[in-house]
Image (cartoon, rainbow over all chains, first blue to last red; front, side, top):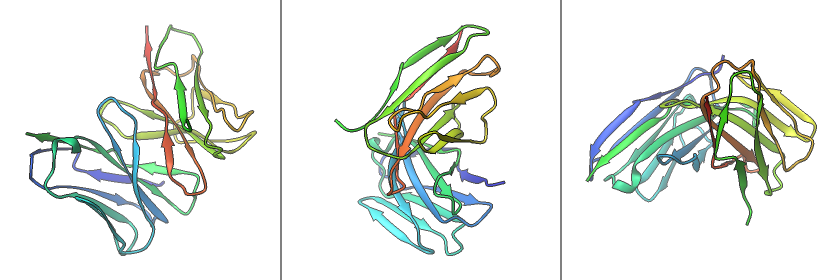
Amino acid sequence: GQQVMQIPQYQHVQEGEDFTTYCNSSTTLSNIQWYKQRPGGHPVFLIQLVKSGEVKKQKRLTFQFGEAKKNSSLHITATQTTDVGTYFCAGNQYNFNKFYFGSGTKLNVKP
Amino acid sequence: DGGITQSPKYLFRKEGQNVTLSCEQNLNHDAMYWYRQDPGQGLRLIYYSQIVNDFQKGDIAEGYSVSREKKESFPLTVTSAQKNPTAFYLCASRGSLETQYFGPGTRLLVL
């Protein structure tokens, strides 16, 4: 069945260092979404990638979708303490009504 | 204010008791979802509904039931058959743009 794997599970960085989380799907995805969940909060939508090889940027965040549409990454440049939280990817397999979430990467940023 | 609300914020369940979690949205979204999140883990899909009076089982539907009698409402009942119900329950809705909007969540604890 559909699976979305996400690594690493945890990442501790010093403020100013970069951070990357990776998602891999066992099957080709129609699109992938990224969410951020602050401690004690609920997931908040960040971005959606649809096209093969797509790259999107939001300030210090860079999102990539692989050429085969089976993997994706989120890179944060020069982390800040406000980046703390858990980042999830969610893949959709040509069924817009069902999303498979990765297990998340918990980011801790030390000031 | 447009949004998605969940109640209660915390819920305690006794052995053998059924409890119902509320989810309401005024975003005029057709699709609604229920996810379960365990500590340090990702989101697992319990049930989803694409339209009023229709719903589908997700990956972990056993021990849960739902109804979708109104577009705005998608309550989740955790039945006594769910032997390990302690978790954070998240409701989401989705419109035509595919972005999922999450409610604040309900934390269910077993007494």
